[in-house]
Image 1 (cartoon, rainbow, N blue to C red):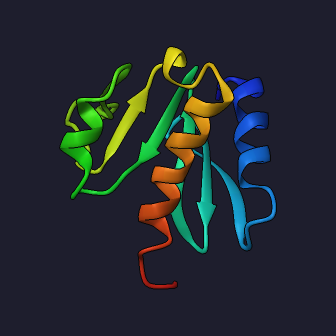
Image 2: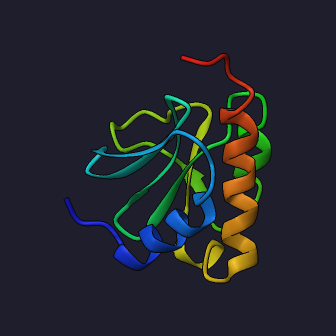
Length: 109
């Protein structure tokens, strides 16, 4: 499982202080769970962002995004963000906030 360790450290810092954050290796990378729900992750050098089905199309219109399609079929509600979209702290935090917005709107597990 190869994933960008520096990006993982940056995501850890962004999620620091939130309750119930758990890391799991999945999708060939690293996934961050918040309150039992998949929030975001890292596959290779890309951020895997769970934005939810309602904002999926809007997210795809953002720069540096593509459908998350590692199975060959896009997973609605999840996008890949290329490294250019998370290169600075502001960009990464904006994506993490989007992911948290969806994740924290789900009923607790």
